[in-house]
Every structure is written in structure tokens, then in C-alpha cells.
Length: 150
Image 1 (spheres, one colour):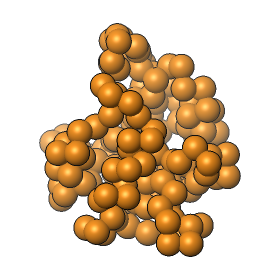
Image 2 (cartoon, helix red, strand yellow; image 1 turned 90 degrees about the horizontal axis):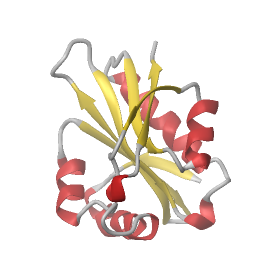
Image 3 (spheres, rainbow, N blue to C red; image 1 turned 90 degrees about the vertical axis):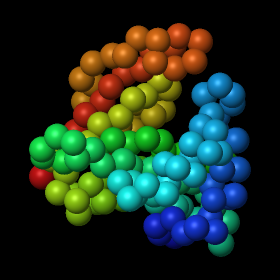
Image 4 (cartoon, one colour; image 1 turned 120 degrees about the vertical axis):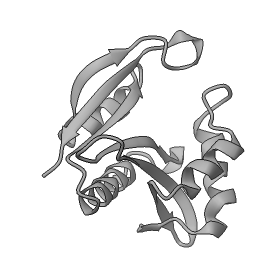
């Protein structure tokens, strides 16, 4: 598996993964996804195998407060590639980007029913901090996980 930063021509393949991983109304719109990726305050990592995209992850930097913190917007891996460490490596890449920007912490929302994602985050040192009720569509709650960075 090859890991690299996003390039402009990656968008169609990236959004195709979004369409596989999420159904409406949970899915980001094309417009929102383009705006998110184009922001100077994000880092987007791509996982690819044999030139085909297998997954991606997006990190946002929050600088309105000092010190900088990072927010994981999404980590998405094609179903056929899951269970092979792709999500874990994308998460490590996001953490590397956060460290490069001197972020002191990183956080995320995760559906409380997404057991595999929760296991990954906990294995990687994230700890449940709180809960956001009615965060996802159909009033599903999210757990909020955080990790302090060095």
C-alpha cells in the first residue's frame, strides 16, 4: 500500500469512496467535500494500491484557539481493504500531519455503533471524552474521542 498526500486529480476517486462508505444523509456532498479538501487548514491523505485508491482521511486544523488542535473529519476505507491496517496507517499519517503543525491534541466524532472504528481509535491511544447526542442523521449519537499529542 502506498500513502501520499491528496492531489487535485484525486477528487473523483476519493468521492467514489465516500459514496461507497456513506449513504445519504450521512454522506458529505460533493460541494462540501471539495471545500473541505481545498482549505488551507486541512491535510488529506490517500491510500492506494497498484494505482487504485483504497481509502483516504481528512484532518482539519483548528487555530482559533491557542494552541492548535486537530480534528479528524473522516477516515474512509473501501470495504474490501478493511482489516488490513489501512485505516490505522491513515490515522498515523493524520497524527504526523498534526504534529508537523504543532497541534497539541487531536479529536474526532464516531458513531457509537461503529465498533470497529472505536476499537481502532482505542488501540491507537484515543480515549472517550464525551458524547454528542443527535449528532448523526436519524438522531444517532456520536462518541467524542481525544488524544494528546507530544
